[in-house]
Image 1 (cartoon, rainbow, N blue to C red):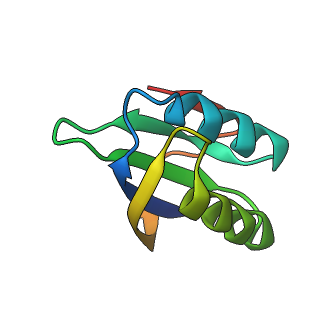
Image 2 (image 1 turned 120 degrees about the vertical axis):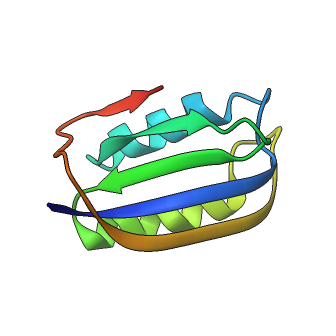
Length: 90
């Protein structure tokens, strides 16, 4: 199991290039993982990498890209069954 950081971002986060922005931020911070839309409106993010880089990504997720409006961010550490060396949009 790989120690990973799982987040759900709520607000105006779909249709504003949020997943693409998350991908760019994660790549810049050398994080692995993925992001995807959830059916009920939020964005889900899984992050793997150095804790300092993940902490920086959490700070960035609170702000989001220019067209977004983040109203809530729920994150927790989990054990994930797969290691991600790169980041992907699902």
